[in-house]
Length: 66
Picture 1 (cartoon, rainbow, N blue to C red):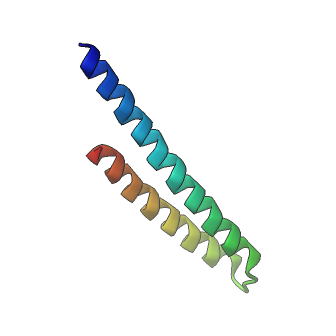
Picture 2: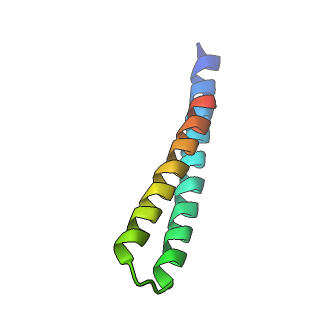
Picture 3: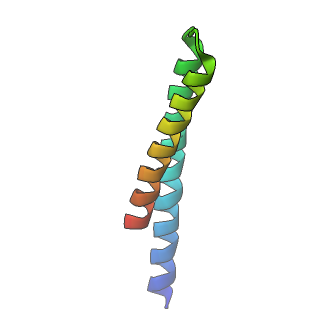
């Protein structure tokens, strides 16, 4: 029972770490995209949103795999 509890704590910590790393990367890319001037800001927003959701889906798959 104690071993299961410790494993679940380790898995949860791993999931939190994966999520934190991916969110930091998403914020870094979003800030870079914000700095660049564009003539179509709505198109840039769509691109950033698509990329963000794609990266978060991959992160979710990695979290499930842990």
